[in-house]
Length: 448
Image (cartoon, rainbow, N blue to C red; front, side, top):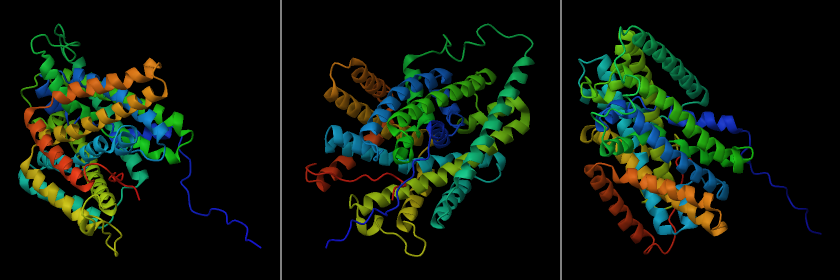
C-alpha cells in the first residue's frame, strides 16, 4: 500500500506587503535626500539648471519604471534585468545588461566613501581627505566583515529623521527669502530657465548625472513574492516611488537654487548643498544637513558594499566568475569574506583614483544600459502579446529613446571608461558562454 503524499513543508515567503509599504521601501532605497549630494556637480554641468535636469530625468525614469513594473508581472519571482532581457530577447544582450549593473554595484560604495570623506572634512578640516577616505573604506569593510546589518527599524528612523531635516531646511529657505528686501525680476523662474546660461547640451549632460537621484527604484521588483497582488502593486509602487521622489527632489533643488543661484562659486562642489543650507539657516543648518547626509552616506556605503559582495558571491556560486574565490562563504561568520575584502580594496583604491562626479557618471553608464535593456524587453513582450496595443508598445520605445539620448550625453571620459568595462565583459561573456550559446547567471544582490 503506497504512502499518502507528504505535504510541502518548506518555508515560503509570506505576502505581507501592500502598495504603500512598497512605496516606502522604494523611498528608503533611494533616500529622500538623494539630490543633495549631486547638487553641486549637476549645477555646474547644467549651468545652474538643476531643476530642469531633475524633471527631465523623472520623465525618463517614469517610463522606465512602467517597463520594470510590466516585466515584474511576467517574471514575478526574478526581479532581474538580466532575466528580463534574456527571457524576451537573447542571452547576449541579457549578459551585457547584467554586466552593466555590476558596474553600479562596484562603483556605488566608492562614491559613498568619497562623499563621506568630503563631508567629514567639512566638520574636521584639519584632517586631510586621504585620511578620511582610508578611514571610511576601512569602516565599511570592517562592518561588513563582522556581518553587521542595518535593521529595517533603524532605516525607517533614519528616513524619518531625514524628513525632519528637509522640513527644517525648507523653513530656513522661507525665512531667508522673506528677508530679501526686493525680489529681483525672474527670481522665481530662473532655476527652471536662465536665458543667459541655458544650453541644451549642458542640460543633457547635467541630466545624465541627475538620474542618480532615482537609482534604486528597480529594487522594488525584487519583493514580488512578498507582495499582495504583485501584478498590480509592483507596477504602481515603482511608478509612484519615481513620481514622489521626483516631486521631492525638484522642491529641494529649486529651493537650493533660489538660495545660491551662482553655480560657479561653491566652496566645495561635492558638498555644495551643505553650504546652501548654511546660507539659508546659518552654521546650525550647515552642520545639521552635512551631518545628516554624512550619516545617510555611511549607511549607503556600508549597504552598497554589502550588496556588491553579495552580487559577486551569487555570480561566483553560479560559476559566472571564479568560484574558488568569489563563491566561498566564511564558515565562522557566514559571510562572503573574500568578496568583502575584494570590494574593500576597490573602495580604497577608487577613493583616490576617481572623483565623485566620475563615479556617479559611471554608475549611470551601467544603469542606462540596463534601463534601455528593460525598455527593449518590455517592448518585445508587448509587441508579441498584441502589436495593435500601441500604448503598451509605445511607452517602452519612448523610454528607450529618452534613456539613449541621456546616455549619449555622458561625458567622453565616462563613455571611454564604461566602454572598456563593457568590452571586457563582452569578451569574458563570449568566452564563458561559448559565444553566448548558453546562459550565464547574474544573481540579485542580497539573494540567497
